[in-house]
Length: 452
Ligand SMILES: *Cc1c(COP(=O)(O)O)cnc(C)c1O
Image (cartoon, rainbow, N blue to C red; front, side, top):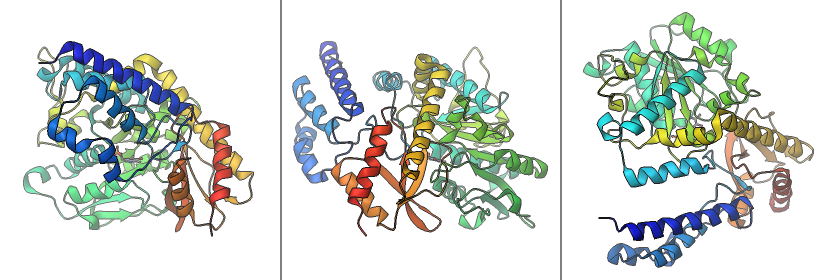
């Protein structure tokens, strides 16, 4: 049994330590990243002794937690410009804590009626936002699983008996080479193989060239995949034109909105998703721009039955019945976390307006970075950013070495990507604390550490 007093004391310590951690992080008072070698960290954290002997107390827990927090990556830090993982907001953090204590794995209604109902309502809200109000959905542990699930639904549409008899060999998936790698993985996991992937023609920045869409003969197109936005560049495919092309041919239109669908909440940026309501399926990660911890991703489909058909031969529909409803028929997972609660509490606290303002602010800050960099002749900026992702090069310097140096110093966390055959540095503005001052400091720092 829990010792309630001990729990209350440890939880209090956790809150105080996390509060201090987020406070010093968002003030930028400490390095954004530390990467000690694992052997030294294991030693310093006393991992082996604790695993073997246990015996942690509130006092030793506090000490452990302080070191644990200090030796990681700080996503609230203004210099955190790295991967697209959310700088989490605290209501979502509370949801993780609640889930950790209650553990209501609500894929079947009897394992968490409140959690299941919250997920259901969050999904209805997301479906309405993407313009599929009559559709169905489910939350999964991440965008990669969400892409797999959506493409499984697409496979069930074009080859309904594949579930029973295996995959026919005439199915192809149309996707740009810039699509997230989970799409090509899904092709192999689904049994279509890499040979089923037909790369779409793109412009120099990886966007699908809608004037050069292929005419496929002798094969059945299982789905066309578009990005909103692309992971590497943060640029959007032309959903309206692609949607019309798919509709004319009866092709399943899948929109990977893992990162960018949240821009639907910003009046200024919603136009980037114009045409998303033409999709047969959409994925939308809350753990990117809706500020929840990893992971909480939505699979949303136009026809509710299509999602259930993904995992069986007969479609069914979810209703609010007296006995509740089971989401388990629509997921790869069996046991599932209370993912809806994370999204719900952020919404409940900030409202869709507050989350939309956050998206707008991050996109504007990234645009500002682009403007500031463009004033400096050594920076090469291949495109004007549409989202909070910006790619650039500093002269002919070794771009990877610049990044490695900044990470080693703990001064900035940024990533890099290949674009047009050349390595580019890549900034993703995730933390609300990032401002002009830190962006100017980054530009100075890059110039200072560049080697040729
Ligand atoms: C991040 C991302 C994914 C993968 O999502 P995970 O939650 O990391 O599995 C898929 N597609 C796009 C466009 C993404 O940006």
